[in-house]
Structures are given as structure tokens and as C-alpha cells.
Length: 605
Image 1 (tube, rainbow, N blue to C red):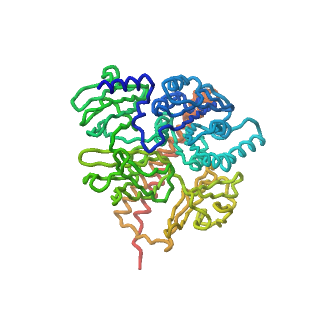
Image 2: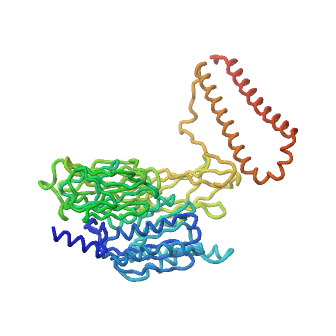
Image 3: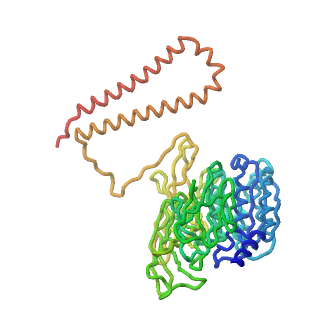
């Protein structure tokens, strides 16, 4: 016991990360992590609460001791406020003191410059975490600036990203805001084997940062359901990372024996770090049984563990592709040795699942055991692009293990419209796709367009002239033949003239020709009439609401000019007459339609 207490003192005094002992033994014990934060002026609006500082504090807490880390900022200039060094107590203190430098805003967004500077130093495998809310934006003006921006973006994709991959540099990207060049970030991450995460809101930033960190330093977890989790007799310690709102009431941790622990009242060997948006609690040698949390347990909270019984898998890919199945290979290990035969518990079950960020299960499968102790299975192809999580779960009657890895689901082929909207470039993103094994068809409002190969992995589609007042979808379908199997994938439609005044959804036609529909009987006709009336009333209500909102927007600008007329009785009389005429027209139209339905006769044969 004295030895354990001495070790704990060493951990606290030396700044050992609370998760340092809970890392995957198959992962590098000394990862090199370089965190890059965008400080361009737009971040003031997209991260007004400076949650980047909370994300940096979370990273400083979760990175394992003796890893290497550094912090970089960029806008028009690249700065390195925390140079590369070992992650120890001093490094963590310096990282936590950088909050003010993350709001030292600059103009422009030089993504190429900061990636070159942050990865310039030699080394082994390096993980770069790039957080930005914009796109390549270099100093300059006019056509010269547009040329520089385009050239820098092209260099990132065709030159720098492949170079970084060849040097074993993995770039994980976090996109914050809707204006970010998401395609650029996704393609950089794909090329280097990193995760491309998206934080739609500042509050989602911590979740995205955590997904990236778990890619770098993965760990086993216990399932956390409704604030409860079961600790088995093989768990040597756990870390509960509990997210909550900034103004949430204090939480408490309750053990199986009913003992209640809080931030201000807990044993000396329990570490409790509190942040306005999360609490991190480390419990060594926990009691066996059900633990629970009193108070709000935010989404994405988790319990990581240290145990000789471990759930392991082949490296789960950070990028998945629409339409392509996901093979899974997992196993159980005890202190590094694969469990099989007599050493494998008879009642063990393994499953794999793909879950959305809201924990909705998108696909799942049972994994089947092999003689070598490996459990294999295949997840159905993802159907929607975006961020998700691959979840592996192993359980028996007496214990559970879970492993969660963030993934990014992307289309296997990207479509890009050129500047003058006359041509679309299609480019294969799946590493095995090319013009020999991939066929692409394109149609615009039912008209088939020619798709012409233009290189080993690219195609061109010439567009007909389109009414600039109409927004129309270009439908794209992909057929891929790999390993004696054919995949048929419908890509998301590319919207042409997305800002146009008139939207055209297009029409789907059956290959067998138009379908016949039976004439409705009187009851059905009456029902359809009522539904039509309800729709029309709803449309009228929606129109009135839209007009009212529009009038409210315009009133402030027109008020000084309109108020003198509003005081005249004649103005209100004209307004009332117009409103009455609108209502009468609607009533007459409804009565006419009902009279038409009553006069309808059955068809003669």
C-alpha cells in the first residue's frame, strides 16, 4: 500500500496524465502531437467563448506523460507559443496558460504556411491536429489574390499532403463553422491517414477534439448508460470524463457501497480535475459493482479503464466511404497475448456497430470467432456522409469492454463545379477506384450527360446551358467492380445554381413507363378534398407567416416614411379591403373545387 501511495504522489507531483496508464499498449507510448489553432479574425464569431482554450486544456490533461507536444497558432503569421517538448507537469502548466494567445486575432488564413512550419522539424511518426474555421486566405487583392489562394490550395492537395504522408506525418483536421473548406480538410486528412472531424457549433468542439485524441491514444472503456457503469474484478482503475453545461450543478460519484464522492470531498488517492465544461475523475483500485453519477451526464461522457483484460482490433480506418462495407477484425488479449481456445471465456460475445454522433445505431453486426481467437464480421455500407463512430463491444456474464473510434464517412467520388458553371470534374477519393474499374453516369432533369475520363482517376462532365434563375440537381451514379464484386452507389446530387430563385427537384421515371392509377371512389375523393383543403390552408398560413416576417424585417427601414400614412384612416380602409378580397378569392376557389367533385360521373366503358 505504501508503494501505491508513493506512486500516486509521484504521478501527481510529476504531472502524470490521469489517462497515461490507460492507453492502448499497441499504440506508441510516446506520440508526438502538434496542435495548431486558427486565430484568424473570423474565429471571434465562430468561437466567441474561446472553447479552444478548453480543448487545449483537455488535450494537456489527456496526453500521456513523456509524450511530446507543441502548440502553434496561425492567421497571417505562424507562431509557436509552446515549442516542442516532453509532456510533463511544466509543459501542462504552460499549455493551460495559453488561453489569451488563442484570442490574439490576425487577418487571413495561411494553412499551407503553418503546416510547413509545424512539420518542419525531423522526427518519427507525428500527429498534427489542425483546427480552423475558414479556407485558404492569403494577403493580397483582386485577381492576384485569387490566383495565390488557388495555387496554395492546389499545393496543399497535390504536393504537401502526399509529402507529409511519405514522412509519416498524420494530419487530423477539425472544421469549425459552415464556411470552412471542408473538402480541403477532408482530403488532407485522407491523404495522410488522419481523422477529419466537424464541429458544427463551438460546444461540439470538445467532442471533436476528444475524437481526434482517442485516435492518437486509444483506450478501452466501460459502457456508460444513464449515468451508470459496471466495474468488474479485473479493472485496476478507471477515469470518468464527464461533460456538462457551464452552469450545471455539481456532480457526485457514488460507489457500489453507496459512498458518495464530490470534487471537494473525496479520498486522497482519487484525483478530481474540474473544468467549467467537464470533470475528470481518476479512481485507482475501484470497488467491484455498479457505480453511478448523480447530476447531469453530458453527451459523449465516457469511462476509460486500465485492465489486463483488453479489447483489441486491427487499426480501424479513420475514413469510410459511402456504399462500401466495413470489415472488422477484433480479439481479446490478456497482457498482450491473444485469448483463444481454453483461455477464451465460453460466454464471450463481440459486436461491431457504426453509430452517429447522437448515438443512433446506423449499422451493426455480430462478430464470429475463429480458431485463432480473432472475431470477424462486416458492417453494412454507410448511407450518409459525415462524422460517426465505430464501436466495438465485448461482453460476457461478468464483464464488459468497449472501444470507440471516430470516423469520417465521405463519398468515394467528389464532384466539383468549375467557376463558369459549364463543367463538372469528378475525382475518385477511394484509394482503389480508377477509370478502369469505375463507371459513372450523370443526368440533369432526366437528360443523360456524357461522362468522359480525364486521367487515371478523374472524369469530366460538360453541362448544357442552364437558366441562371433555376437551381437544378445533377444526379450522379457510380458502379464499381472490385474483387469480382460490383457496387452501385448513388452519390449526393450536386446542386447547380444553388442560390437561384427557383428550385427544381427533378423527376424520377420508372423504366416500365407511366404507372396507371385507379380513380378514387367518393369517400376517397372526399378525403383527398379535405387533405387538399388542409394543405391549402397550411400554405396560406405559411404564406401569411412569411409575409408577416418579411414585413417585420422591412418595417424598421420604412418606418420613418410609412408612419405618416399609417395615421390616416383611408390607409387602413384600403388595407382591410385588400385583405378581404384575398380571403374571398380563396373561399370561392374552395367552393368551386367542391362543386366540381360533386358533378363528377363514373367513367363509361
